[in-house]
Length: 249
Image 1: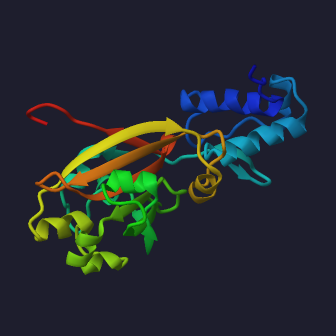
Image 2: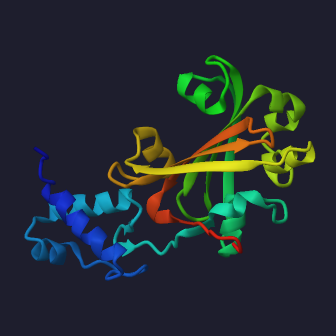
């Protein structure tokens, strides 16, 4: 039988609902601890724990000597199709963030790794194959990260496009490089939701109870061969994913 939430968790859940539903708007100062303690019939130490939970979830800022303020950040409105076209030097996350008037950032590391069974199955390569891994942390300036995005590229593509081993792959990134060597790419994406693991909590600056979206994208060439796989982990309340359908989309 599930255990009931602690008093602090229950208070944070109640305040989080008021924030998400707009009762406590971005920039609003929460009532002082003594008022919250009276409202929720709790002692002030419990209220402080509840406020720390909200801060870990990225919903408020704790400002010593001033109080607790609802974060003013807005979601990045991400068009799912932004990966299919190059705008200036960018594709993907940067295109959507800049469209929203935000200044995006990406921190990238590149390594060669051995594909385990699950990754090998997604890449359609034998387990143990050495593949290129490009791991990014992305967000907008002045705010915690929005997502991680890790891409694994099959060896034959890396051999044909050696610049993929570099942090900067040039304007448009990997998909523009694939187009330059004659590939027409088709994408397949699946989306699920879960709670974050410990490493994701640290990287994305979120609490253990803050849901994340997980997206797996496979890129196929015109012969239906998998050329790369990307796994994104996105903070749910920092990101809005928009899909358009139909013959005129």
